[in-house]
Length: 105
Image 1 (cartoon, rainbow, N blue to C red):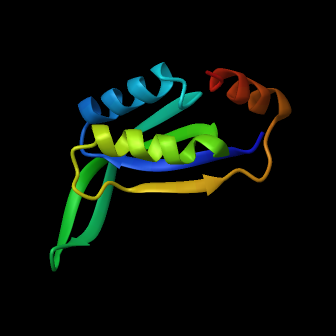
Image 2: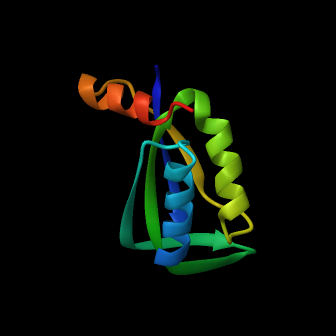
């Protein structure tokens, strides 16, 4: 089983909780860690923007990445949500076993 971490930003704690609860509840993620209070600077529609956001670290199987992306897009309030998949090259064996078991249908 190959693991992946998806990096997702959300505009507020409510959106982050809704996405996290759905992904874990639907067994699309073993765990979602929400880091509140992030500050983002980005270009949007020709202007430099700044925003406070929450960062979600979504731990899942590589085989579920497309389904997770689709579900995040369904739940996310942004027109263009940040969803970046980062492959896990190594990890503690028992954690990776738990991740795999937690994302089985």
